[in-house]
Length: 200
Image (tube, rainbow, N blue to C red; front, side, top):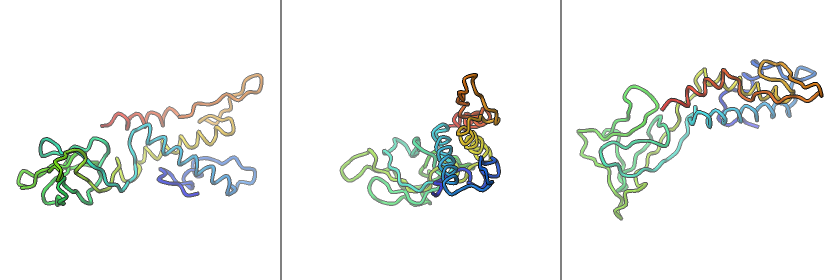
């Protein structure tokens, strides 16, 4: 299996977590389990923060705005490949700026005050979903160090859960021998994710 858009590699995971194996070497089946856990932890991070920390190529469509600024409210824009106006004409990079000026990701495409271009309806007079923006999307193109740390902690906790351990490697067993399910998300990882979830 290949990890799709994982925030850590299996090698990073193995350096962080001691695998539960008798021989010390993981079988291919065990590696697949680790890769599945890493990918699941990465997608959990996406869902929890409502952000992705990798670049995604896509074309998105938007309504004609009332003014010169086209707000990107459904995602975060890293870079633009092509913008097509409602009339089918490409809006070139000389006619717009991306906002904010000195940071990524971007949240808006604003036509320059000096530009003669305006946002246009389509040939049928429709204003809805007629402007297309093709580019690279995501909150960051690569995972920040704290997101990688959160992914390591979550993946490790989920891996150890298979053996009845919590994130501190302590087994919790009742007098009847029943393993108590540990907390799924370590507090430190949860704190990191909450920080990103609060960012607009």
